[in-house]
Length: 308
Image 1: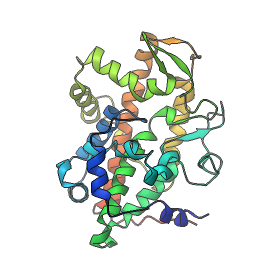
Image 2 (image 1 turned 135 degrees about the vertical axis):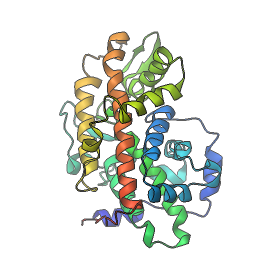
Image 3 (image 1 turned 135 degrees about the horizontal axis):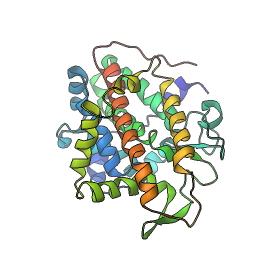
Image 4 (image 1 turned 180 degrees about the vertical axis):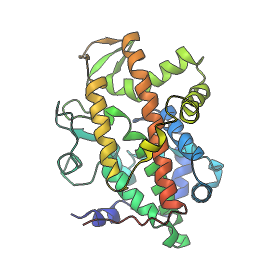
């Protein structure tokens, strides 16, 4: 099946779109980068948008979000188990062969039924393509584009979480039960949320805003200021998600799974060595999301081709 055909099936829109948004605001967060991780990724991205792209994003967001993209960046997690959106469940991750520590689109990007393109890298490709048609769409396509924006923003966070490109047998660490300091957890959840919450509690007085500011300061004046142009380097928007996925499985092998066994207790040593990786991946996700949105919604006039 060609990607252009899949693009059509990726958008089962209905008129109840805004009603769905209102209803999910009160729902608890579920999986993927924690709420905090997705919020930080989207805040970083929105702060880096060029004026025209920033205006388009504000126009696509529902009025009650007050122009804040981060307010709705967890929406795809919150609706993934609704009947209407069950088709999106496989789009949050990629399962790779155990211990291969590599990613290959043709081998790995599919759902449990073998349908190609139904993984987080394929989703980013398709929603990027959808948004690239924004300037050519009519006003009645606004809701389609709003959902595309939110899915893209969320999945750019997911693909940068290393354990979202993990081993098949343990479901990206979800079945590796262990203890995080003194409480029960699993390896996937450690990378989704435990490291972020521990960093905020131990280093920033439980103030997530301070952690956010520290990450953004490292982008503008600190550790990563010289790396941003390299992170944004992308000659082919359709191919770059594969690069991001390959980075994640590499990190999962070198840092996520390393020295971890079921029933282990992970504490200071693991936290101190992995926390910089988590914050860097949040930053990279935000920088790269801004790059994509600037190119497809801004003044770059770049057409995104959908190969057969």
